[in-house]
Structures are given as structure tokens and as C-alpha cells.
Length: 203
Image 1 (cartoon, one colour):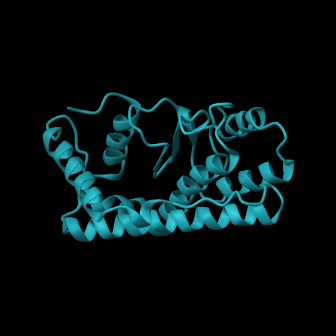
Image 2 (cartoon, one colour; image 1 turned 30 degrees about the vertical axis):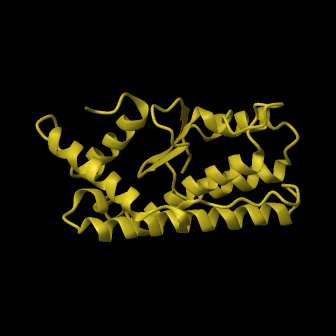
């Protein structure tokens, strides 16, 4: 199934890093297409995150191409860091494919103990980190990234309290906006997350 926005996304990657191997781009295309990702978008987030994976596709912050952590001599993001972010979010698409959107969103909308839900969300994030780390190592071995380009995810060190806070925030938003629409379903919760990054967060 074609991925909406994938061609323009890959074209922008090629324009940003023009010396990339065609085989590298082809592999990245296959990795994304095989995830059942429906669409890829790039825009300026109203949130500091670099990516957001939802059941119907992935959104990337414009900063993924021009991140403040980049070298002062070149505003381009190191390609390995860029790839790590992409791999991480696309692995979430594989998780949606494996577990279903209902399961992935259940930690925010079902009556699950918050601490239990937070542990499971952290586990999913750590799995995405480890998968992205392995893909980076694979690209180094194939010669598509230089030696020493290894990337490490940060979710293994993230406190579960941070995930609990996010869950409480989402649940409070759902409760406060329940008079406007039903967010306790796949489409509703997805639109809520999307609104949080695309526009000003719901007050």
C-alpha cells in the first residue's frame, strides 16, 4: 500500500544529504512501507518532540532536518541522528501493526491502573529505541553510515513518573473536552494527540 508523503519525504532526505547511497534510501523506503504506515508528514510542532506515531501514520517535527543540537558550523542534523528518530517512530508503526491501534491507545483511554500503563508505555518506547539502535548498527555495517555513528535511545533512563504525567494529562483533556466529542476511541484519541502537536494544545 502506498505511503502518502513518502516520496516527498525521501526526496527531501536526498536533497539534504545528497551523497547518500541509493541502496540506503531504497532500504529506508522498504522499512517504512513494510510497517503499514499510512502517511508521513513534516511540519513545525508546537511541542518539543521530534516525532509522533499514530495509528494512521507518522508526523515529524521540522526540527528533524534542522535541530538545535546540530553543529554550529552546519545546521544540518547528523544523518545518523536523523535516521535514529525516523527508525524509532516507524518501529512504533510496526507496534500498531502487531498489537492493533485499540491496544496501543488503551493505556490512555481505558480504565487501566496508571502505573501499570506507564510501565507498558515505557516498555514500548524502549523497544523502539533498541530497534532503532540495531538499524543504525546495520547501516554502519553496510557502509551507509561511518564507523562511530552509533546512537543510543534515552527512554531506558526515563522515569516512569514522566509517563504517568502524560497519561494523567491525556485523561484530563479527554474529560474536559468530552462535551465537544468522544475521544475514547481510536479516531478520537488520535486526533487529540495530533492536535497537541499540530496546533496549540487544548486548554
